[in-house]
Length: 279
Image: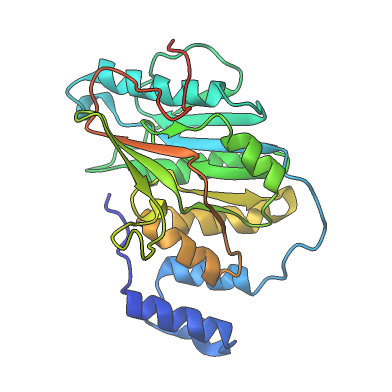
């Protein structure tokens, strides 16, 4: 299964402008892709006016199949580093769901659930797993929550959940800032928006898939989840655009609350207050 193709920047700018101008025929345009159509359909629905309080953060983690990796122990170790970063949260109102063909070893925790992915698929199956995870979320009884797709080797700062639940962004969050960690070279980088001082800097959401949390109120879930199923079939750089197109703009986070890790070795680095204990 392949990731959905992203439209050009010019197309996105023009589509967003037409939506903001209220051009009613936009949904009938043959140039509109499926995710944009889902966003426009959500845009046509009135925004939820009832004031409620988000009480939980739900992390959704697609997990690679064992036959697709050369070192299963390392992959499961990285996953446990991620799960431990959840366990270390200063606010424990979170839940994590992992979806994969092979159940990894992790310390039993009532907040962490594994669901089997059984459908045979040729090629990369991350996007289908995300769809299964979102279907699973819709089938469960959840309170007002933030849903965050999370790569199974990134790290959450211990204040991530408390930040989300204290700020109460009406539609969710997008990570502008974040830490980039090249483990093999033991080097750290700062992601964020461009400035005169840092003209080459890129926002975190363009670099890492663990970058967006969407608000999902129970009464809106039947509309939000189908939208998110379309959104998550695309590159994460599309997420803010599709949220804006749906008239559900995400609030930028200017604090370092996620660490994107790559070039993995057999150790977990706990720098920059991303500390946690190993299993």
